[in-house]
Image 1 (spheres, rainbow, N blue to C red):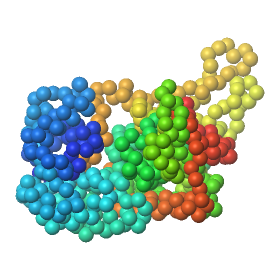
Image 2 (image 1 turned 90 degrees about the vertical axis):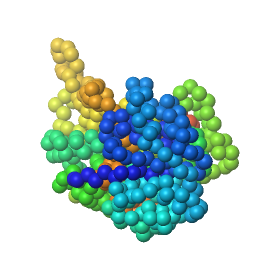
Image 3 (image 1 turned 45 degrees about the horizontal axis):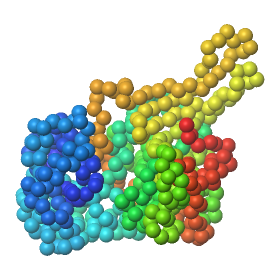
Amino acid sequence: MARTPVGKLLLFGATGDLAQRMLLPSLYGLHADGLLPEGLAIVASARSENDDASFRDFAKGALDEFLPDDRKNEDAVVTFLQRLSYQAADLSDESTFAPLAQKVGDVAGGLAIFLSTAPSLFEPAVKGLRAVGLAGETVRIGLEKPLGYDLASSREINDTVASAFSEDRIFRIDHYLGKETVQNILALRFGNSFFEPVWNARGIDNVQITISETVGLEDRAGYYEGAGALRDMVTNHMLQLLALIAMEPPSRYDKTAIRDEKAKVFRALREITPDDVASHTVIGQYVAGAVKGEIVKGYDDELGKDSDVETFVAVKAHVDNWRWQGVPFYMRTGKRMASRRSEIAIQFKPVPHSMFTGRGGRLQPNVLVIRLQPEEYVQMLVMAKEPGLDRDGIRLREVPLNLSMDAEFAGSRRRIAYERLLLDLIEGDQTLFVRRDEVEAQWTWTDAIRAGWATNGARPKPYASGTWGPSAAIALTERDGVTWQDD
């Protein structure tokens, strides 16, 4: 597609944790590699009072702390900081938008806005931007999640944004889609002919998606108490990963074809009704335990009050279409778990007949593991012959075939997901951003689960910190003869 770079970037929330850890280092990385438009000016904004000089000092401090040593270049840092200016603004105060618009100046050359804020501020932010001429045809906007807390609030936000920005100028961000290994799912599926014949219900037994964290609340207590694991992770990242695994081959790599196929998957998700939630979902909340040898508090103790918010959720989902009929998609995510991991495990069906039965041991079904973090690799578990003379028969053992992204592409720099997403926002490529119909289909599905929990009075089951969640999550898969891929 033709890229149309803008001349200016307006960065809201510029003094927050996300900006320090991800956004400023990402923009610096693009600048240092010569990928930003030559004259791109970056206007930073937040509620705190700063001038250009003090914000540049702040930005330099963030780069000093969060940039890897091998990426630091003093000359590049100096020229990057020259791109930055600052204007304080309170999105809930309409009087602050006029000075902001004056600071931004003429937007005839194009303006990209990155808006990372609480959902309650989307409406005043969009109204304020439109009132001062920062929402015209040359302006595009990037929206950081959460985009609401349910379907109704998501629609309200989408309607508000749509009142000022057309859909082709709205960039809804799910940072998982910027990860290199996530995009490799498309390369694996559609760039290799040998997967397609078995990438369906005839070849695949089940799919497991795990996103586990070892951390607890940290500084997200206010947000997490109103969200919980289902809203925070499943509605966004996990369903996007499921769609990339389950989607039909797009006709081309572009924003329309790829997002059309993902939307079809979301519409094909089988509704989990109140009668199904007990057998298809598990919710939990961590209590005190040990993580990496350190004793940690339970969720209620960290929060300072009793709560029924789930910090763990496991779901058994089905995609009701021709390709996936009968194949369960198991998803689980939680905090204070045994290890930090984001991965997809695709278990293929066993061979129809084993000539080694009784002699070479039990055959294990092949498993394709796509690890997203902390390492990035693709691993295929296959059966291989153990070395030996085989006088008592061939003995087989499961061995991994590994493709390490770090090792295989050692000469290529591994980029932060936000580098790609910010560059695509600046250049106008929506392929890796989420369309409105996707967002609303995702909320429709997870809202039904929450309604089922409410109907049944479901409460989170306790699980010790440092484990893989409630024992009921193990039963969720073992009822189907499936074991979670925990190795």
